Structures are given as C-alpha cells and as structure tokens.
Length: 591
View: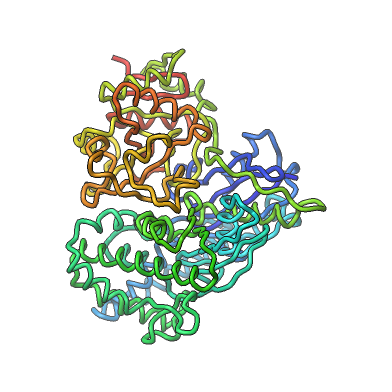
C-alpha cells in the first residue's frame, strides 16, 4: 500500500509511504525555490513520484493534513492577513483610509480579469487541485492538530505499551490552536483542546510588530531574547500575560484572560480588539526587552502546560509537535522538568511535517486486516539525492568551477576543517524540514569565534545576534553539554532542543553556542542515522581533539536550503565559501 501525505498550508509539503515506511519527503519550497512556499504541493508531489519511479496511479490513498478547502496561493496571502489587521488599527488611530474610488477600481479590475479568462490571483480550492490531478476519490482528510499529534506519536513513540502525553500547539488550524492527546497501544485519544488566541499567536504578532515576518522569523526573537536585561524583560512578560491564560476549570485548556472572553482564533471584532490592545501595550517597549519578555512568557506557559498535563494524567512520557515547539529554548526547560521522565519533539514540527502525520493516520486507517505494524521512522534525510543533477551542473558551470572526484572524501573534508576552511556539503539525500543535519550543511571548525562574522558576512547575511549550532558525536556529547535525563533515551538527533554548554568545554565549540546564555542547539550525531557525517566529525575529532563541528544550513539568507548540485554550485559562486563538496566530488572555483 502506497500513501501520499500532503500539507497545503504554510510550507507546503508531500511525503510518500509504502506500508509502514517513509520512502520520500520534500517541501514545495525546495523545488520552487521560494522560501516557505505554501499552497498545493504539486512540484513536491512530482519530485517524489519521479524519485521513486512512480505515477499517481501507483498511489493507493492520498491523505491531506487539514479539513479546510482553502489553499493559499502565495506566502503573501498569510502576510496580508497581518497587514490588513494592523492597517485597520493605524487607520482607526490616525484617520488614514484608502480612497473609496481606489477600492472600486481594484474590484472592477478583478471582475474584468475573470471575464477575460485570466485566473491568476483567483482563489482555487483543494477540490480544484484534487480534481485536476484526478485523485479526489482516493483522498481522505484529517484534522490539523491530530496530524501534529500523529506525527509525534507514531513517529517517535518507540514503546507502544507505554502511555504518552502528546501536546500540539501552533498559530491555528481547522479552527483550533492547541490540543492534548494520550497515545497508548497505537491509538490517540484527545483529552483537551482550545481555539483561543494562543501563545503561538502572540509570538507571531509580536514578530510582526517588531518588523519581522510572522510564521518565519520567530526564531530571530528567540535568539535575541538572552541579550536583554531580566528585570526589564519581566515587565514586558507581565504586560503580555494580559493576553494569555488557562481555563480555570481545566488548565489543560489554553484560553485568553477575562478581559477577552469572546476571543477565538478567527475573524471578528473581539480578536481585532485584542490585537489592537496588544499593539498599544507594546508600542513603547525596547525591541530586545519585548523579545525577551515574549520568550519568557512562552517558556513559562509551556512549562506550566506540560506540568499540568503530567500531574493530571500521571503520564511522564511527553511528546511535542506543532510550530510553537520549534522554540528550542522552551523545549529545553520542558526536558529539564523533574516531572518528565522522557521527552521528544517531532523534527521540524511546523505545518510542513503535518504531511507525515496525515500519512501516518492514513496508514492506520487503511491498513489491511490485522494489527498494523509500528511505523518505522528513524531518518529525516528522505529527500532528493545530491547528485541527481550533477551532470547538468558539470555542463552548466564548466567555465566557472572544477569538479574533482575523491576516493577519500570524508578524510579530505576533515582535513579542510582542520585548515580552517568553510565547507559546504551537499551529499546524500536531502534533509526534510528547517534544520540542516549534515547533508545540506555549511560546516566549519567550531573553536574560533571569528568564524561567525566570516560566515555571516560572506555567506549567510544573518542578523548579528543569531547563534550557530554545533553538531557533536553521540559518544562524546556528554563531554560538551549537560543532557537532562529525559533526553538520554533518544538524545537530540534533529536539533529540537538546546542544552547548556559545560563551562570548562565552552571554548572548544565557542562558535557553535549562543554568545549570551551559552546554550547550544546541538545536533547529536548518531552513527546509525548519519554514517558519513559521523565519520567526518570523527576524523576531525581524531586530529583536533574536538568532537564537534559548527553546522548551519546550506543556503543564502532568505532562500531555501539547496536541492541538488546546480543549486549548490549557484550558492557557492554567489558567496565566499572556501570549498564545495557534492557527494564524492570536490568543487573549487577556476583560477
């Protein structure tokens, strides 16, 4: 049985399963080259079918994450919701309004385009896309937050006989913003949910208020937060607590404070009033203070929510999913709770991974008679092969770069790192999601703080306060970072938690930790999951004494991670990377 799972919302994506195994997974952005591309993942589906040598006739079931028929046409659709809401506030405050004749002209232009047969910019529903591909009859839809929970439970719960407490929290989907489930013996039972304006919503709106892109740049506020003074951050946090709370009868249910009893995460005057009050309340706060207060709020609410769940259910094994839990600092505090015996977070747990959840739910629903086999999930490198377009790259860039095949590529990379070179690695199958995990990574020696400015100035163009991350060998991770007991069973192979760097070892990987609070969003490299990346870091360790490398995603700022050889060479030529590796080829600029 072959299943296609798709997410049509933010960061559209597609995965293909055969029985209980993931065969392929990719986000639409990687193929379209448009960062966080939303909508129907047509290109992603085509890429998966091509990679596997399949056609849509070979797919038995199509499983859609979410029950809505709305399909966004561009990233701008999401941003326009924020623009519209805040424009209304500004017009109310300052009396600025759009000329009514301009409104009429814009509507008239839309009607003329329809009459002329121009469908660009006209909304298409999910049904339109499914009918176009001829797959409506084999399509099933699944609730948004159940998909989040299913990804975490079926993907990460290795002990089916144990009970797991599964938390899903984000900015909204299918009319809700959060849900709590109990997973046991292969089944998920929902025990609480909310449609309130959630902490994730507050985070997105403050991101917008500070001039960043909501549903994309929240991590920048998280990175900025440690630089503010705590006493001022607490003032900002207390202001934000006016907009977030817990239900008095059931504190597993997130809600808004008594000042906003009618707010729901949908359109309406009550929500508009809350957003206006939020905007007004934060206008005079310093940008770093506001970021720090917001992060403090997010951490405290998350910790209280998880503690309440454990206390009420007695279940100490916790799983996390939904875009809120991309907040690795909050995840760190959850992992450190004495009440939590085990915790894990589905990798890149935003809406992009709901394609996994939908596919997992479809497998459970449509499997043949008898108990379904547990889903096998241990590898997130499920995308395209790095060399799928290598010959094309060799021809296209023959006048600009040299390709040299190596018989010992891992040893060569380790030697380059020892020589303080910045190496871009495009090898093997591409990682799914937001984190580069070694196969589409820029890597460097982690013990020279100057490398941060070099990479930022020459390649990444990142905000100066943003930290890089270390990738460290599983066997030696405990030498560099403090690992809570709750993470020792699975560790963190997908960069979903931060850890406190050990003070006596911080200088060994100083460029890979946060410069203010000395935390590290470590990728802990398991030999079985990442054999080649593990081998590279092992060889570097043998000669340097450092069991880690600096690891950041292989892309230019504002663009998706590279797909294959052509993308890799293009980024190489448009940056100041020292060297590029594509599988077993070393690529250098022509002299």
